[in-house]
Length: 209
Image (cartoon, rainbow, N blue to C red; front, side):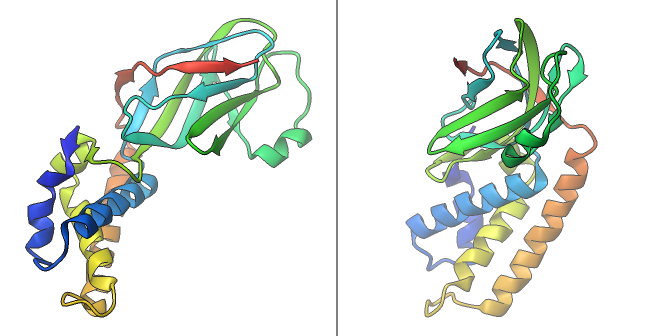
């Protein structure tokens, strides 16, 4: 993990009059958007123990400063499950061969994985997730600085210079920096799609009976 402090000098080169709180929040917002769009912070979680007659499991992120952007895949006993929207679960065909689909829900700080149909035996599942920083993060994953610092900083500068009636306000410059950030995000997304996966990290799972 790396502190937001490491990003700040690069921001102040462009907007020296920007306040520290604003610069930090712009960096966090930029990191979140970059992670959600590029999906670079992919994580293979430790195997999840699935219990019989338990369909819902709370996922806890490996770092307090990060949360789940989305779940990319769930595999049970070597079989990939289909991702579905919550409101489509009622349309799925019943099955006696174990879970065939999954969906996720988020309420407040709780992120849950739901399996359908409900497992009828104990087994294991592998969950592949995308992470992003929380809004309150003061540090972020090292990769965002070591490999994608320009994308994050460009996005932060675009947000700062878009604010009206400030010494650094410049909508044209903001648009240019946002285009630059978007281009770097597309490149990062393409790289993430080639199978770049971070190492396994233990993640606590709590079942809901």
